Length: 213
Image 1: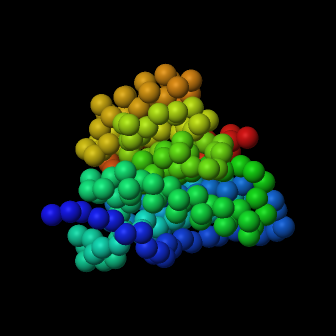
Image 2: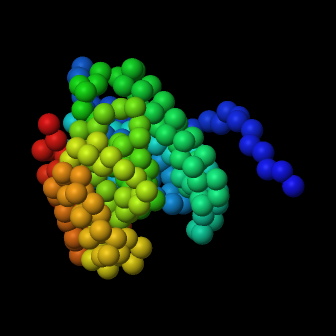
């Protein structure tokens, strides 16, 4: 048996909200978690204080399925053909961000936000993508272990719920050490909660976003 791969074109989906006025505006791009949709991530971005002054972009993963709740959801990748999926995701995300920057008045600042599985995608977009970022916000998801060049993330907000059994304390501590080794002192937040955002998380996220220059 011989395995082959054929390149084809698929459509990716994303949502954009732009502030009132003529701009230019900074861009906040978000990546949802496993089994979620672009609407889920956009709602998360909306709850970050001060994000209404940013262009909010929520990008949906290319691999749809019906999740455990019987609703449409998507995944960024699985273990199969991992390197191929990573390269496809990089091209897709680069193209979406470029299109939004071309169509809307953008001031040059780009911050990436990732929740759970989307945290890995945010890291890859920052380190491997074509667009220079001003910062990266990671909630409940680890930095891909094979990823090098973490200094390209510039500034990082790293957070987890104290009862999160998916993004464990061990993973969190390891990511802090890796970032420091890359010359980044992350803003860290361990809030009361599990695998998901709380008001405490959003308050700290807003402070981070306000400090991005």
